[in-house]
Image 1 (cartoon, rainbow, N blue to C red):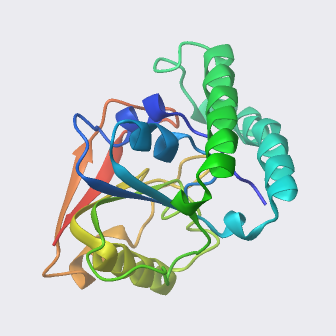
Image 2 (cartoon, rainbow, N blue to C red; image 1 turned 60 degrees about the vertical axis):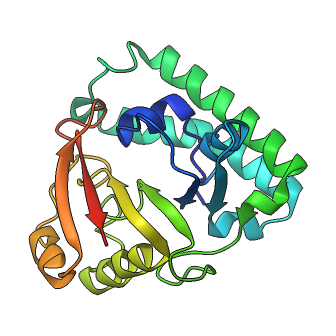
Length: 215
């Protein structure tokens, strides 16, 4: 199991966040520190991930082991990544280590913010959150999850959102291949409004857009 730790700064850039609403769900949050840092800013922030089913010692070990595993994916597809946002691999590693530390501290002191669950069925009522974020699951793993799974997952993210869903990135992991059935998925979601919006972040080559869904 890969439980990635991304920083608040990465979330700001990936999702083009200029201000935070009252409530946010981070779906497939892994070991990221966004929920902890958003909560510190007064937001009703919740993270959901199937990894939170793990006993705490096992979760800690999995998060720590995932740090070098994520770097290996980058190394295996080096030509598919650019470093202008991070500057260099060292800064990326520092951000991820700090994020993991912040997550592990918060999941211990405020476990109620971390809910075990996974798409396409989330354990929340309709319209529970103002904003729902989903990073590096949908489309990233299009080689593992098929079109029907993606459609069900998108509908579920919309269901638990009161207003808006943001999904990043829109390419597959590794080489960054496009997802051929994305336009059809957006047609199937109507009358939900969809927009593909450029963001101030790029790590995979060409992965500088997010999908925005509005109820």
